[in-house]
Amino acid sequence: MSDETPHVNKKSVLPDEVLSSTDPGDEVQRRFRYQHTYTALIAIQMTSGKIAYKELLCEHHEDILGVRNDGKFEGIQIKTKQISDGPIELDEESVKKSLLRFINLNNDFPGSFKKFIFVSNCPTRNDGTGKSLNNLIKQAKTKKPQDSFKPSTLDKFFKWLCENSKSNEQDVINVLSIIEIQQGPSIEDIESKVLTYHLGKLEQCFQTPLPKLKIILDSIVSHIYFSSSKRIENPLQDYIAFIDGNEQLLDKVYINIKRVSIDSINRLITEPLTKNLFLSSRKGPPIQSNSSTSDLMFYKMQCGLIEEDSIEIMDDLRASSETYILNNYYKTKNPAETLKQLDQIRTIVKNQAIESKSRSKLKGTPFGVIMLHDLEDRLEKIVENRHRDVYETPYEILKGIVGILTNECKVAFSEEPTGGWKKAWNNHYSKE
Image (cartoon, rainbow, N blue to C red; front, side):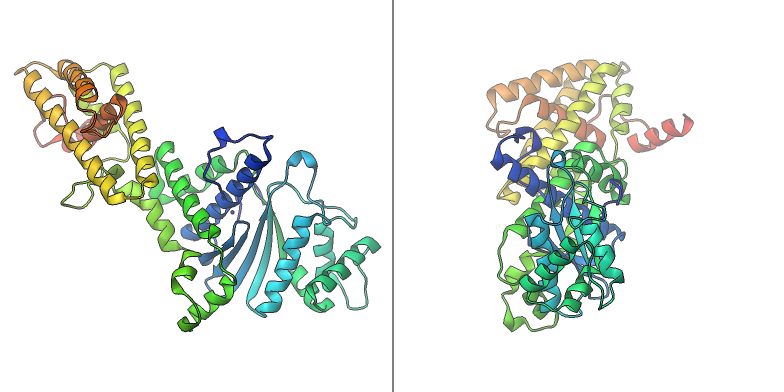
């Protein structure tokens, strides 16, 4: 499988920038992050319909079950290894554990699994030796009962699998013949691959700025991290009881924690896109932006004869404010209180902009530059004298919120044209 079309996924809470490549603890975190991010990739492909799953069951960090639309399962193991250590070989402990896990799942739930998938960030050894997982699977698919695996070291490993899984040879052959090997992106570039080739390609994410895409991906990964971290003795057995209606056999709360549904992923994707960065009214529904880009903000500031470099700085601060606000929302333990605080910040900034426009307005004369400078002075004074009222929000973020409000027609740096800003903006761009 190529880097651009991976099929299945993990993550930690720490960003890559603070992880050391030599510290053993950080290396564990890095591998966790890969597994969670790859699972996020599967979830995104599931949501887009590229994979025929209706939900995922996160048994543990590297242990994922895909629930197919036909009710069958696909077992997924996600393994990582330093590429500099060479390809993954059959006698490695991680490979042995994965194969035994697949065999045990098939034994415990006969007829329930359509496929098993072994995913790694680096190649698996692919030759004719007894150390090649590819060779083992290839021979299993064509093996006749009287045949032995070749070379003898491969046959010895096969017998080890039978003995340690307490299974007969045919059952092990049946499992090996439905294993698929997939190579995912590298540990270093998995996030960029998911953002560029998968999340960013979704219809609802079209033209979404990269900072917001990263926030959305982080929220999906965090959701999967939470689901994977909750230990349940036998989640698959409980899940099957759940879908069969035997709810008395399990704790529904715990089994639901392990489930990652299309609806839950859709919600994590669409919330940041439809809630206007969570700057919503306390009394009403969130207000949606008039544009998925900052074109309207540029046009309105140009109408106030504000210089291009000042507009570009405002746009950079607008994007930074989006990231700042979304990060605060996802980190909070009290979303309702955070929304209330954001609403207060928004109201203060909006009122300052309205007052600044009233004081700066000169009939028949452009006043955008005067208003912008006055508003900048006002925001600096708020940070200095009313910092608690804006919950210690930095000046740059407050100024970025001005850009957000300008883009949604709440703030303007010149008189409103006949028919309103959106009509004038559409007419302007239709002529270009």
